[in-house]
Amino acid sequence: MKKALLSLTVLAASQTALANAIPDKLAEDAFIYAYSIDEAYKFFMKPQLKQTPHLIAFKIFAI
Image (tube, rainbow, N blue to C red; front, top):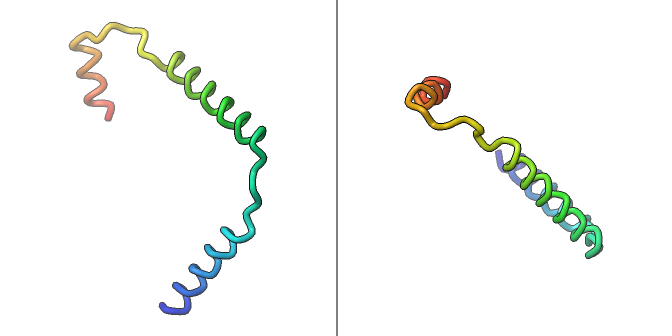
């Protein structure tokens, strides 16, 4: 158990130590891309139906 825990700790530390810094422009582009995908998802996945008692009951049973 101790060997496995030690090996996992060493592996995690080595991954952190080997990580390279991301250029600012690349980080900004990634943020803008992720934000636009999130906003598009919110827009297209917004319920287009009115919340009727039948629809609410269906959602409860679908969970």
